[in-house]
Length: 127
Image 1: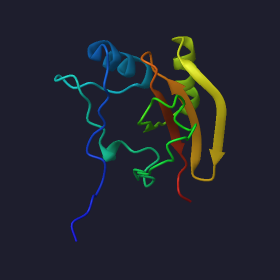
Image 2: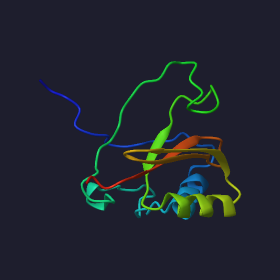
Image 3: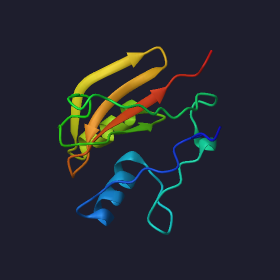
């Protein structure tokens, strides 16, 4: 049977696309290619062997995404969650004080300049 094998892209609607993509480059370390987008390669996974992309649906009344007008939330894998949170705080980003530390990684949430809530996930090495 034909099936989905991964996430091929993440696309954000933005009032100012150029400014928003630069914000993500500056504060989340997303390397922009010459065309203005990014390629997040599985060979960049840290720590090695933890790669997986989650896909799920949530009830329409979930508070997990923040504002109820937000239809999508993106989870970004990161290699240093505390370092990114420090950079975001220094830049004046809105950061949710809630943190989760699960057996498979640490989680935190923040909001970009256009009000999109996103999730940060620092996976732990499989032992």
